[in-house]
Amino acid sequence: MSPKQIPKKKVSPKKDNLIYSPVSSTERMVKEQLGIYIYPDKEKEVSALEVKKSENPKVSKFNDIDLNKWKEYEDIITDSLWLIGGRDRSGMHTATLHGNFIPQIPHQAILRYTKKEEIVLDLFSGSGTTLIECRRLGRHGVGIELIPNLVKKSQELIDKEANPYDIITKVIKGNSCLPETIQNVRSLLQEKYNRDKVQLIIMHPPYHDIIKFSDYPEDLCNTPTTEEFLEKFSMVVHNSFELLEKNRFLVLVIGDKYSKGEWIPLSFYTMQKVLENGYKLKSIVIKNISGNRAKRNVEHFWRRRALGGGFYIFKHEYIMFFQKK
Ligand SMILES: C[S@@+](CC[C@H](N)C(=O)[O-])C[C@H]1O[C@@H](n2cnc3c(N)ncnc32)[C@H](O)[C@@H]1O
Image (cartoon, rainbow, N blue to C red):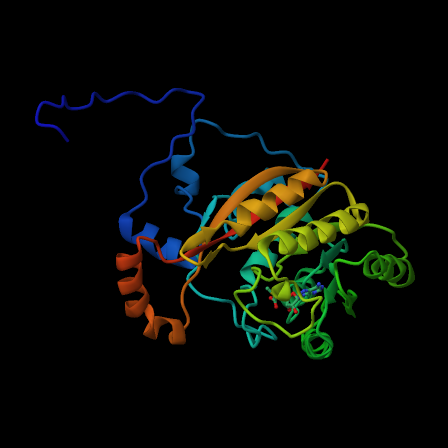
């Protein structure tokens, strides 16, 4: 504050504005660490814009969230900054695959963009995190994974997860870049679900070559250049487009990489590919990446390099939300 600054006058709030009282700093810190959206005290502080309640559920076309009870969904994040404290390790979320995402990501996406018994398609299903969440939340799930061993192991894990809603979760071995694989998904949709579309697509591709998942040349981690990686990524988006119901959502989880002294914004490049293939952008979320123990040991080394090299150390990745036009 500059010395001559005049103290602010108390202004009475406008009637049509939401009035949020400040949350204590400790509460804010704890909630942020847990990745929980910070709500004002429900009863006292949201005074001006009270939405009239009706007896009938008011839900949208793409989820089961009852807007008449919107204050009750405290676990659903609506902010674009996700500071998640730790990974959900419950049940079959064993986190054995290096490069998997935290279950909270598909959890949030499924709740926001699907209704019970709808179908989620994960085009890079890895260890099956998305399909385990599907079981918990009562959505059907199809996963595509290139590495045969991972297909087998993930299916075993998924099958061990409780299935209270009696839904079908199936991992297919295949290369997501190929129209044949997408055709196999189409046949499976017919055979197992008697449907021809899915209602949510999740994509968590390799962040180009930063983790080596396999030696298969079809593995996106083995594409020689960024341009070829983007070309293959674009094929996946293009080929799967017809499988998604109109106006439904595609969620892309991706991070950037650093190569030869240069920050390569894979996230923005891949975003552009999705936009070129018939989608509109709905949101970009920035999510923290908290280092594992091994990484923590080399953090001081990276800090020294960053100070010398004029760059910043990756602490975030992106979750991008698109809607099919
Ligand atoms: C970042 S991981 C996904 C991890 C997953 N979200 C999880 O939580 O386990 C990317 C996965 O894509 C797979 N993959 C790479 N290229 C592929 C392709 N062309 N078709 C299908 N899967 C591919 C890799 O084998 C790897 O398991």
